[in-house]
Length: 278
Image 1 (cartoon, rainbow, N blue to C red):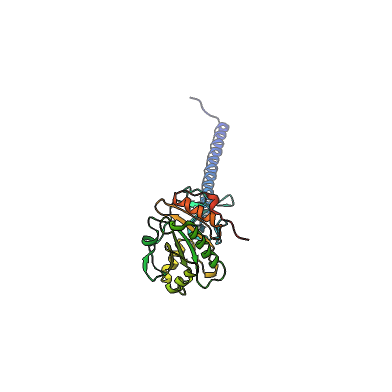
Image 2: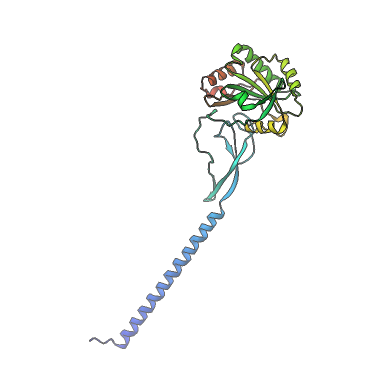
């Protein structure tokens, strides 16, 4: 049996001691690293916050984290819902709430509420069932005391109505919704429409303010002041699920062409932009 000398035993003891201390140090380092990773994870979690997402109801690709207007159609962006924003290397990445692909200029679906309204003859109607369901429609927004864009909007509808003849009321239906239902009674709307020779197939809509506000919001036309409503025309084919909108003061021929395309279930994006008058 080999016997170790005293120096050999001392040397072996020192080696074991060093190895033990090294192991302790490694474990401590690993523990601290794990703690650091946990801290990073906690920091990552705290970097996640809720932000508001504003979206154009007819151009869903137009989004913003702030209120504003759609650069394409000038309608107010609507608050969609809270979405998650995560800090990634100092930058914030907005996670899209709706990833469905839609071609610019039109939407394949539009949810329209079934609200109770009154037409210019005082008839009580259900907006969706009586005016929209299964039809092609052109919708604008007006109020009878308006002296700026509303008369030209109505005059544009009047010219298109004349050009399209008996197609209005058969192939397409015009709807003018008051953004001032507290003032615009059916009688006022009827008298106002008569100034523009509104014929069959052109319905003027008013009603309870709460109901009209709900409708305006759904159509992306809700404004805090009636004077702020945009000169927009929404054209939709409910049967084929095609909806678009355009500048309400576009050339008559352009608006008519857009309506005919929507009747067929097609939308040429170039027609949705309109041409403002000088």
